[in-house]
Image (cartoon, rainbow, N blue to C red; front, side, top):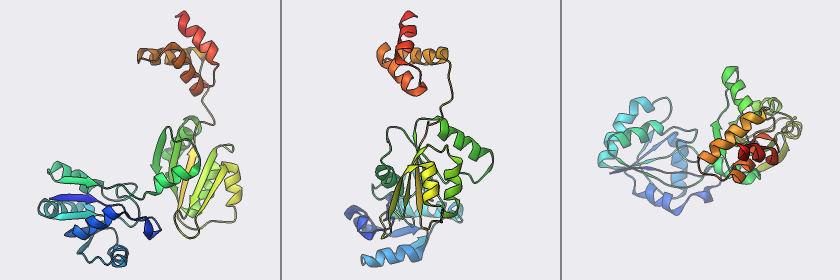
Length: 266
């Protein structure tokens, strides 16, 4: 049979899809983080199913049992809100089902990550999702250094009481969007710099938060020789010298003309 990964609303019950409802109705068993919360969701749509609690504290123990169930039955996997596996339990079960030859079907649907990214107004060309950032130590330092230097858009989950610290740890001019209580009654999206956002939320904040950050505001200074070498790599990969020079210029801050001249001179 199958394991179906079913996204559920992140706040507004109207966001569940018709396809998700059909799979929940057809499932023989629903594995969920919190049986009470999922029970309320199913009751809202008049669905009665056997539920089993499956979360980070028992997934290692229950995964073999659920894989066996999925071999003969239709098992649906949900989390409290959003898409399973995205900073939520589920990877261990999906991987085990794949290894056991059980069909895995992933449904599209609600996700705080993509909702915040679209609402942020920041570029979605290169996106890095980090989940909750480390609270302290080397891991946090490395992440903040990466955000400061890498021209990508970073999506982070953050708790209300640590939001201001994270904002203050970013370069002050960093473009950010603080997305709070997405799809809920008190939804708020604040767009501005990290400094402006820290001031805006200086009085405290409540609710679930997704922080979207445009990185690369403090680029590490590269020598022109290093930049030209990178442009040559782009040419080797198939780009024209003109496009390679333009790309290297965007990434480094050096002038396109200077890069191009050195590139064609060999």
